[in-house]
Structure formats: C-alpha cells, structure tokens
Image (cartoon, rainbow, N blue to C red):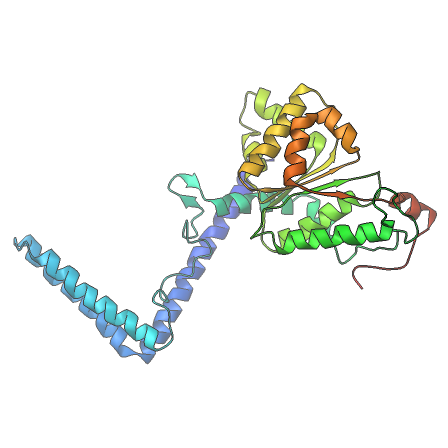
Length: 336
C-alpha cells in the first residue's frame, strides 16, 4: 500500500537526520584538517576577502573585476586542492558525505521524489508488514536439503530431486551475487510444496539486507492493484502501481491461482514487458506446467519469459506433507 502520513513523516525525519549528520561530519573534517594545516584557513580567508573586494569594484563599474576574480579564485582553489591531495585527502573531502549524491540526501530532486526516496518508501512499507517476519524464518541460513531425495529421479532431466534443488540454489546465489551488474529474472515452476516460494523468499532476504527494494505479491494481490489502478476513481493505488515498476525486485508468487481473464493476462504482459524494458528484475513462481501457462497467459507472454528468464523447475515430494508426517529424504542443511 502507499505511504501513510505517519510513514511519510518517518522518512522525512530520517532524511533530515541524515543531512544533520552529513553537516556534522563535514564540520569535523574541516576542524581536524584545518588545525593541522593552517594554510587552508588562510586560503579560505583570502577567497572571502578577494570576493568582497572585487564585488565592490563591480559596483563601482569596473567591468574587468569579474574576470580578475575568476582568475584569482581559480589559483587559490587549485592551491587548496593540491594541498589536500599532497596530504592524502580527496578534493571534495570537506563536502558532506551524501548517501545519495543525486538529491543530496533531501529525498527530492526539484519537486519530484528521488529514486532513493521511492526505494526507502518501499522498504519502509515492507519492513512494517509481515514480510520481514517471514524472511527471518525463510532464508538461506535455514534452507535445508533434507526433504529432497537423492534417489528420486526426474526422467525429463535425469537429475535427482536433491541435485535439482542444489542446482536451483546455485542459480539463486548467482542471481544475488550479480544482481547489480547483470539483468536477470527467475521463473520457478513445478508441483506444489517443493520450495518455490521458499527460494523466492531466500533471494528477497539477501537483497533486502543489501539495501535493495523488494516487493512481494501473490498473484491475486498484484492483479487487485492493477484492477484498482485501472478502474478506481481515487489515487489510492497509483503509488502502489508505480512501485511495481520501480522496485529493484518484484516477486510474483503463486501465479495461476488468481481468477484469470483477458484483463489479468494483458496486465501481466504489460507488467513483465515494462520491467524487462526498464531492466528491473522479477521472480515468478507458479504451480502451472509450461503448457498450462501458455494456455492461460498466451504464447506472447511466455515468449517474453522464456527469452528473458532463467527457468528453474523444482522436482520432488511435497515438503509440507513430509513435515507433517515427520519424514525427510536426507539430513543435509544449506546453512551447515
């Protein structure tokens, strides 16, 4: 959902605190370095006095004052940078250390929300929802191979259930490690209860922890937002709709469980195609077979997925049933 007034105020206070912290750091740097190298203070005083003197000349009608001011200031600034560099400091050492140079930690560029503010809003919304609680349990540290058989073989691939799961985890790890440098998407499919949602959550946890914005939707909740944005009269869902396209990672879980129709199929294509064009990653999980997927969502949508997603078919016995029966296939945990 969109930010409430309280959530918006929370974010603004964070940005204000960050600006104060930045200024404090800059002032501490100035105090420390100027104390060691007095010439820096002398240069600043010279810049100030020269600026005032030339301003008076401009007022008195001296047309060359501005040119001379630029020349003298250039020499002083060049000396200042050279002095800093000679002592191992970068030229911009006294500038506030912005987290986001684009908006200078204000959250806005002009009248528009900065990309960092949009991501912070998404993170705040989902920090305050139950996704964080879910991810504390469903993550790679708790992921276990014990419910994947090393004897049950998938005849179409020749891989055991265990080997299939190990391959899937390796692909997820690669997806995470290259997330900022390569555009990739994941498509999990296979029978119910074999770890598709769990692996999606594992990836979400890693990316959230590394500062990326992640939005998780069940298929039905995703299409609910599309419907309200399209047919609703208010703007309540407009920001949610934009977040779907702007977030770093969109997770669509249980695709195929929604009530599908021409609207949902067209909206899915628009969503996936737009995120591909924006090079924003998406993870899809579905219990549908590929044939069923094509039948419901069309060849066009499947073509976009098959050419832009890593297809991962999980295979094995229903883990939830195994847990209820107290069974497992092999004692082996990814976290150990």
